[in-house]
Image 1 (spheres, rainbow, N blue to C red):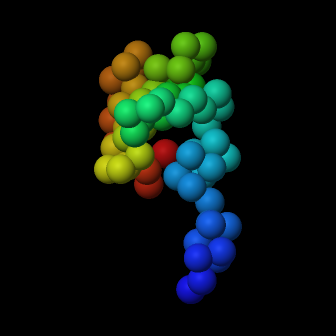
Image 2 (image 1 turned 90 degrees about the horizontal axis):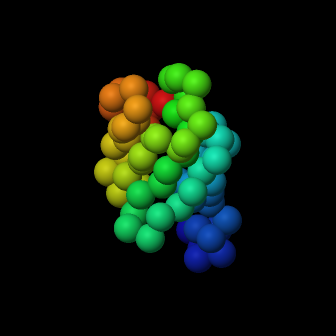
Image 3 (image 1 turned 135 degrees about the vertical axis):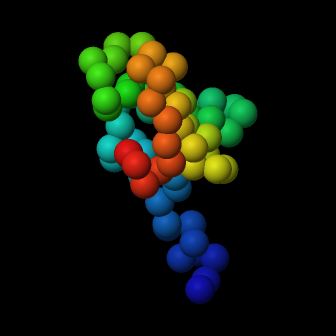
Length: 68
């Protein structure tokens, strides 16, 4: 695979943005977004980009990328 092929692959943030609303990238490797499991208006879902783990700080649900 060539470098230019790798550059065209979607990033984890691109993929999350396709499924979640209001995705905000933080500088520490985390992404915040609106939780899809309840009526959310404050981006209470945090996703760790390196491990794929996520947690909603409002409804306390947790999981991995594949659970979203």
